[in-house]
Amino acid sequence: MTVLVTGAAGFIGFHVATALLARGETVVGLDNLSPYYDVNLKHARLDQLKRLPRFSFVQVDIENHDAVKAALAPFAPIQRIVHLAAQAGVRYSLEAPFTYAESNVVGHLSILELARSTPGFKNLAYASSSSVYGGNTKLPFSVDDRVDQPVSLYAATKRACELMSASYAHLFRLPQVGLRFFTVYGPWGRPDMSLFLFTKAMLAGEPIHIFNRGQMARDFTFIDDIVAGTIAALDHPPADTGTVPPHRVYNLGNHHSEPLLRMIELLEQATGKQAVRILEPMQPGDVEKTYADIDAAVRDLGYSPHTRLEDGVPKFVQWYRAYHKV
Image (cartoon, rainbow, N blue to C red; front, side, top):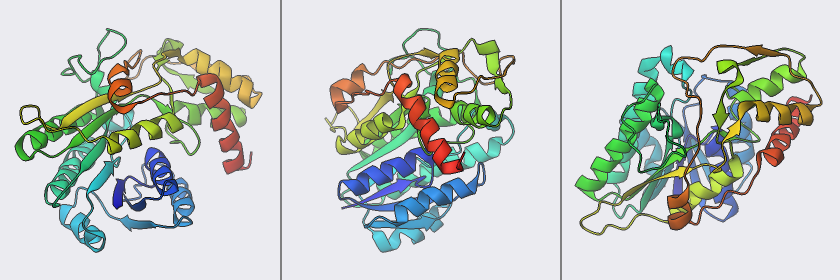
């Protein structure tokens, strides 16, 4: 049975598609190859996927619903979707707000309509974000917490996606699982993320810029753990009880909030380079700490993250050196 993976040329989408193919699934990857970051990296990921059997790729903007339907028509019916395509990045949302509204909100609606129009549709697992917790100060963040005070437009669009999914589950009994990802890192990662930026700068002998003067903590989650949780969500569509719509939201994190400075120390060890640190003020839209309560995902999905930051950072550095021939 075919699985659609949107954002297949992206960091998480590439890894999810690879894992699905490895277990024998047929995968259609969809991506618009946005130039938000180095398109060569996206093409390199796609080159890896295209070498695998049972993979097909379509290039299209998800917000263009008619184009999406036309591009996917040869593969119909697609009854399972992992929707990861979105405009990422908190800080960029200050510069390009319409891009976020179009890609994240309209794009999510396009995928909802695609699922709704598919007879026998089974499950939609979609990416949300830990950013929806906004300025919450109670740690760890629980899926039962209120999330109505986003501190960035990016977070607001992700919360809007959750609300739209809840309404489609209620109105059309469309089974869906929303996944709030917490600071995903690992090989083939995004160039706009801190670990990538710091590694690049340190290996080049350049300074790194540390926001909030280093007083930050993140629930760093290795890509393999995120992939396992995402596929578990796809495999466990929520039951429709008749009274409770078939829509659930889960945190996918490592259940460890690590100081940013600890990550930098581990990066220094892995690269053999001492970081030249420039301490900067907090950036608009950023939050000081994130920490995932994963009890619900453990209970319902069998989610079990196991990669420590001490192990994950060297794996990223090893990939970075190989990919960039450093």
